Picture 1: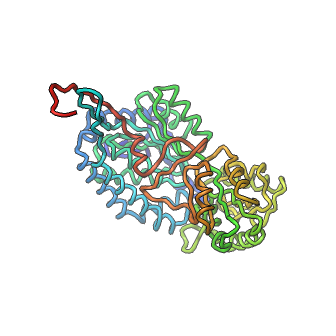
Picture 2: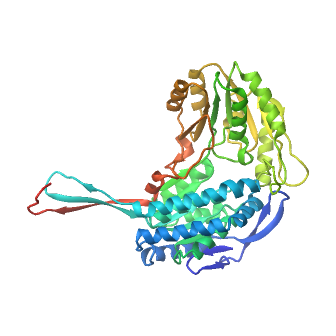
Picture 3: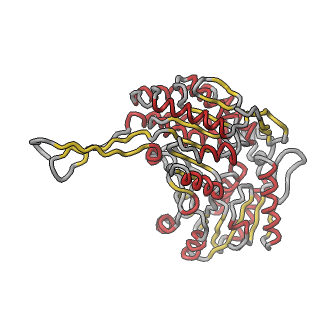
Length: 482
């Protein structure tokens, strides 16, 4: 169903249409969800506009907003298991990952932004002349937000947390593949006392509900996470409507660089995690594994062995490392890229096919002898496919690592801090992980260079996305000081 915060109820969309959300383990229908269209987006935006212009949320003290967000976090923590089960059921990720990592991280993010609510303030600015000058940091208004399917709950928190802390109201569109957990979470927000109309969730498809939200004249700010190609469309729709500012967190083809001095066993394990985590469905996945030529052969053999040990199966079972891909479209796309890798001359070390006859499972796949021009080395596959490339020296690997339209993240594995510092400054990416990968924290900003997006999510930087800065100038008469 669509969830409109204005009335605290689950509401059928105006058209009466629904769409199925599927269990990736089997391809079977979990539920039919209301399919939002432009008229539903209009209703949600109207509710958000009313709540912002006339409702209590932006007029509350920051401390009151903080207390509500802290109650939200407590409720999410209380419902950890239900949210984790919905996330696994609708998305296919391992339940242990959802229950022990992602839902607790959701709680942490909401508490983090609750803490920011009463610490947002402007400045007093000295000016040349007898004037008192101050800046006000004001909520931007109605925020439109579009989240992806790979981390539904975490992306929900990345978007909703800073927007609410700053005093905005929200219309959020879920990914059509994974609407369930965000709808459940939104219900908890309202149980915690979030006023009517502040948070409105619409389920639907990108070309209809998403496009209506991106182009809506009453939406003051847009935030989108998804593919680079869709991000271009979103940016264009925002520009052609009311020129609303847009934050984009988009695709990646992140290099993971294993230097000559690396402990190969540790590097193999970390590179494996960097690529295969979340079924390889990570925008920042270390999907180009660059290995120094002196340790290349050893690395390849150990990477192959590690992939063969990876436990794939029903994500609700204990000990499972990899569940199914999200849906049949992504499943077939990954298999096409695997065939492309074989046809272009890369060496298929292991995997390369579907696993089982039910659901969207793919074997952990490792390619060696990968060249930069191959599609598996250039395109964002978004699946469990590791491409291992060979390099000779730092100058070469920097040039090759940067030779991509993306710039989201990178990993560096070395014992030499001079090497790490050289690569950190040379790589044109938004995040560099040194001897670690996918280390996320509520306070660490995340975003990309180049076509991996614009703006930053998380941390103090994310608050700027949802604030306007207003300068106020008053003349002073006979001031005692300037």
